[in-house]
Image (cartoon, rainbow, N blue to C red; front, side, top):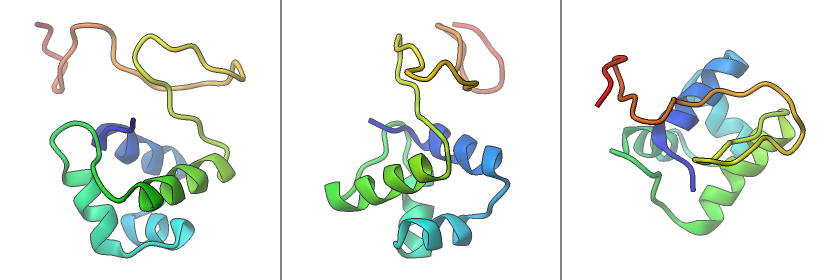
Length: 90
């Protein structure tokens, strides 16, 4: 699973805009915009999600799921448990 926040953070780490992300993944700009507008987990056609994940992987990024360790030991970004957007804890 990939969240909209993860996709936005991945783009930020790469320093690219939505159009460049769409180009790298071979999908349309509106597709990336819809993915990033998702309230939580990104929804879409499985093949499209795979294209985006493969593009991120090829760019050297790895998405880290809740409670998962990084497989390569590289740097990553994740929210601490209980922290919501805006830095407020629950």
